[in-house]
Length: 74
Image 1 (tube, one colour):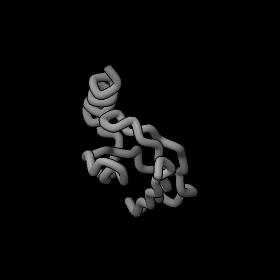
Image 2 (cartoon, helix red, strand yellow):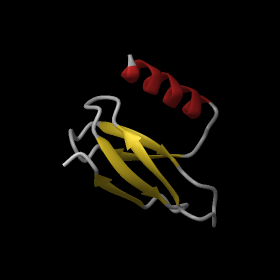
Image 3 (tube, rainbow, N blue to C red):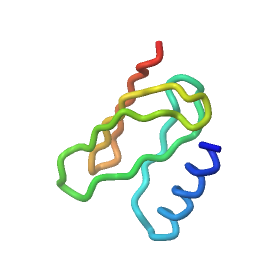
Image 4 (tube, helix red, strand yellow):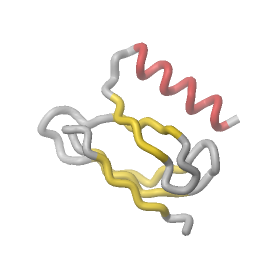
């Protein structure tokens, strides 16, 4: 199940102390996490599928933890 795989990956990232940024899915408001880029790196962008509602969204994460999210499902 997609949610189980997502949860496993996030547990592994936390165990490795990978910086994560919390945010809400723009479609279902589920709590999600994004990897945070290294200090002074360019923002990371990606198209993401929510493991809870399967909605697609565009995500832009900067090194300072700012995050922009736009739904592609609406």
